[in-house]
Image (cartoon, rainbow, N blue to C red):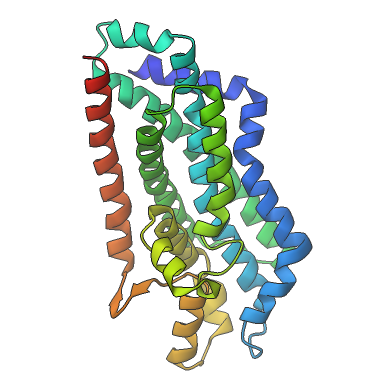
Length: 285
């Protein structure tokens, strides 16, 4: 399975166009924020907050990390779709290789692709924060962010594999990737803060794993800017800001704690890995 995983990773990075398109959603988000959205979002920051720019920059950084861990893992499964189109997949399925190793090889390759690209994004965005606002993430938040990258990328990899296992053509996969890349900015609350959506849309957003990943990234990366911004502020002001900006999620009287959100990501990984094994086993018998 290790050799199969390495083979899939190499195939992905050889296709530079695929690498570029896996980052396209993030590039668009970054440019929209820099050129248009950043100024309008400042209205969501209370007037008494002195470090509003660093607060929003760290908010954007958190959202991008959640998005890139999904878009790059999705692009990684392009190799699997190509294998299906070229009938290479059938050779793997009829070989002595276990079904779990086939599933694991594709998922691990996509996983490592997502982790590598997310870690590179973390370094780049940290440098961006330093240039723009004069601060970088501390050691503990950085360790927490890396740990969350590992978990959220795993959840995304298994979930996307399950969906991609039903896709049989490159055109269909390209369409799926385009739709996902378009929607992800809304689902993760980047194009618009979660609090600006109608209640029904907010409810749907809170059911999607990547949204919880984005909320956890925000909680980690925005901890220092928020401590400065809301020093001495009433708890009601802080709570309202967290809800509006997608840092804290609640449905009715139930609030998703960070531990529950981590459980959602972990559960997503287990659930979709099991479903993927089931789908592959049925298709090869």
